[in-house]
Image (cartoon, rainbow, N blue to C red; front, side):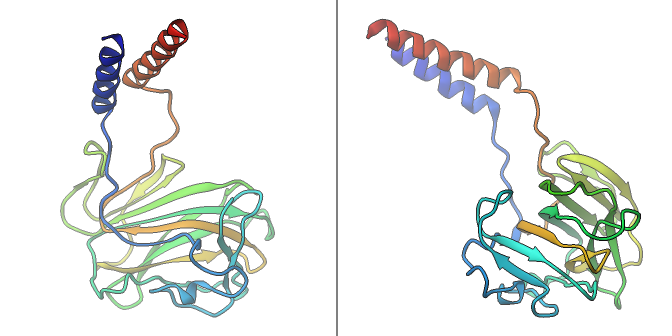
Length: 239
C-alpha cells in the first residue's frame, strides 16, 4: 500500500511540474551525423558560404560530441536558409558558442545576424564580451510582425517589430530591428579575422524561444525530490 501511495504521489508531482514543448523547429544541426575533418556546414542542408570557413571537429574538452570550428578569415556572413523558401515574421536563431581567443581585446565577439526579405538589409546581435573558452548559449529572436508574440513559456512576450538577444537564459537587450521585411535566413560573423569559434546545437525556430537559465528547484521539484528520498528510506527499512 505504501509503495502505491508513493508512486501516485510522485506521478502527481511530476505532472504538476509541467513540461514546455520546444515547438516550431524548422532546422537543426549538431554535427553528430557528420564526419569530423571532412565535412563543413556547406554539406549540411541550407548552409552557404566560403568552403572551409566552417569545419566539423570531433569531441573535445568543452563539447563532448562532434561540433563545428568557425574560422572566417574574410569575416563574411554565412547565411542559413531553412530550405522551404518561406519568409518568416518570427524567427529564433539558437546556438552554443565558444570563443577560443584571438583578435584584439577592443574589437572581439561574434555577430548573430538575420537577413531580411527586402534587398540585403539585416540586423544583428552583437556581443563584444564573449568569455574565452566557455560555452555560451545564445537565443537571437526576431519578430517582424505588427503584433506582440508569446514565447514558448506562455508568459513572456516579444513586442512587434522587435529583436531580442538572450544569453544563457538572461535577456541581454531588446530593441527594434533595422530595415523592414520578413526574415529569410540567419548567419554568424566573427568580428575579427583571426578569431576562432567553436559552435554546436544550431537550431532555427519559427517561434519565439529562449533557453531557461539554471535556477533553484521550484517547490514542486523539491517536493518530488523529498518523495523520492522517502521512497528510498522505505526500501531500506524493508530490506
